[in-house]
Amino acid sequence: MSELRSDARALSARLLVFFWFFATSVITIGFVFRDPTFDNRLLLVGSVLPVADAVFGGARALHSVTVSIALLAIVMIVTKRGSGRRKTLLGLPIGMFLHLVFDAAWNDTETFWWPVTGLGFSDAGVPIVDRGWVSFALEAFGLAGCVWLWRRNHLGDAECLRQFLSDGRLDAVPDRAV
Image (cartoon, rainbow, N blue to C red):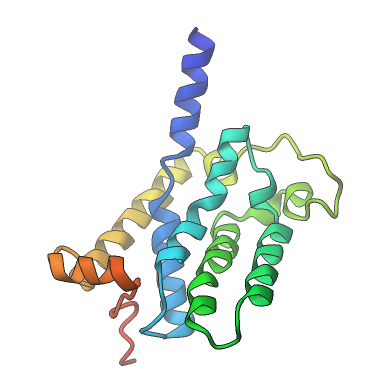
């Protein structure tokens, strides 16, 4: 019973690192694309989707660049060029790519290049969790970034929040007047 409790605590600790990925992904996309119509909803999902690997005990397929590439290829093949659907769906693989970047997932070559390097996975844990106390610092920075995004986009206002939930747009990420 204590082993089960220990596993539950370890899993819950792994699942707490979200803000780092949310903030870094949204801010990065804001600076790179400078597109006020970008739908951030699936970007947010993609940015934390690889955390689901923790359920399997460590970094697995979702921490592999090949899975992100395959998802990107599927979106490009099944959607029409220039369509709103494509633009929305692209947020998912882009978020997954950004997770790999901000998780430094490339440090585990076997998992990062899976299945090119073989069908097995290394014994490595989830990269962000394996950093110990540094993970808490990153999460604190991420939380600060999310608070900044929340305030900057007036998401405390019910109408602004409803609009974001409806279309995924964040007008002030970053200041697009620059």
